[in-house]
Each structure stands twice: as C-alpha cells, then as structure tokens.
Image (cartoon, rainbow, N blue to C red; front, side):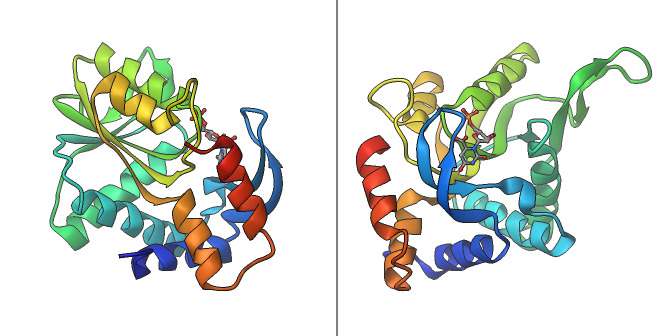
Length: 214
Ligand code: OMP
C-alpha cells in the first residue's frame, strides 16, 4: 500500500505543529536541505501523546523483540517515557524503560542510568538519524552496561547517505546487526506532498533526494 493513511496522518500532524518545515535549512552535516524535522517543537501534552502513539504503533507492528526501551538524553527521555505509557495502555505491551544522565551522579543512587537497568535486549528510541553519531554513542553506553542493542526506532528516516555509499541507517544496521525502523521516511513525505498537491517544495525535495539519497 502506498503511503497508508496513518503515515499521511502523522505527516499532517507534524506539519500542523511546525515540527516538519519546508524551506531551506543547513544541517549538522553542512548539507542544504529543503526540509527540517524539529522534534523539540512537540511541546504540549496532547502533541506528545500523539507522537508517542506513532512510535508505539510502529514498535507494536515491528518484529523487534526487546527487554528495555532506552531514550538517550536529552531528547530521547520524553520519547521513551511517553511511548512506554502508550505501549502499555493501548497495545498491552508493558515493558521497562530507561534513560541516561549526561553527567554521572556520584551520590544518592549514583550512576548514569535512570529507570530500569540496561539488561538484555535494548530498543533505542530517538528523533532523527542523519549521520548516526548520536546512535553510536548510545551503542557504547549499552555495551558498557553489559546489555546488547536489539533495534532503533526514529520518527523520521531522512534516507540520506551516511559516511560511505550506504545510508546512515544501513550503516547502523550493518555495523550492529540490528533493525532500524521509522514512523515515516523521506519518500512518505514526498508522496504526501504529491497526493495533496502541495507542489511548492516538491521539486526541491526530489532533487535533494536525487543528490543525497541512496
Ligand atoms: P546524527 O547524530 O548525526 O545522526 O544527527 C541527528 C541530529 O541531526 C539531530 O539530533 C538534530 O540535531 C539534527 N537534525 C534534525 O533534528 N532534524 C533534521 O531534519 C536534520 C538534522 C540534521 O542536522 O541533520
């Protein structure tokens, strides 16, 4: 099925909230992009609930088996917390969750992991993968705790080349032998723009995909 309606609904939601913007943006990589996904703009309870539902639904429909849902600081923290709630309430998947502190605590309970211990198979939840830098840091953290990564879920797969000829997501999949799934990807956005006659940035989006896509 092309662009199933839950994907179109999610794209409408991120456009309405201003999380997905079309225009001209300079990325961390220096690439000039006609679109930008700013997860920091999900900033009300209602928006977080809807976002969590997008993640929870993608997780529930995936084949990924995991023991703990892990949200890397800072942006991953509300994602892990709210998605855990949604998984339990709407999908009857009641799993432990955890997040890290950027600064290790040397008093009280100590350590830098909050929530459940990182044990067993860990599913990492994050906003966007571009070059994969943030995700690689999480892998190191998980290994340092003696656990192993089971998969990664992000809201948006930009489908861009990583360090070599493969996409950043393919590099992570191959290097760690785990699946990386997303709620939507660049193709979904382009299909949505086409289907809804939102043509202003369509050519720029396609040409960006042509230049940096895989
Ligand atoms: P990596 O850590 O290199 O994978 O890049 C992820 C980061 O890219 C995010 O944490 C943001 O700072 C940034 N980013 C977005 O948030 N949204 C985008 O659409 C594009 C980027 C980016 O700069 O590539």
